[in-house]
Image (cartoon, rainbow, N blue to C red; front, side):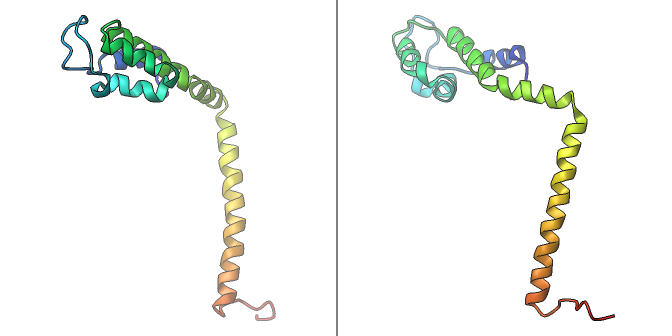
Length: 128
């Protein structure tokens, strides 16, 4: 998800596609192709076009892989950008975690006090 577009492309280009389609001129079976299946998640608006192109041998596996790599890289671009922003401000992440821990301690203390009281284990303020 956080890989560079180049690394995503490299990974996608090494994926296995339709093993029953040895030549580009052979009709494909997109329902059995991992790359075509992933297009249903990352390029649902082009899915029918891609599957039809595979069935009619108008598109090839390399072409469909390129489209998938681009769609995946585009899909995760906001996540990569946000991670880069946060990496540039490590103190911000520490501050958020510290604030969350402080709020969790307050909530836990209140819950434990309620549980002790319900069990009759509450410490009286008059006890010394």
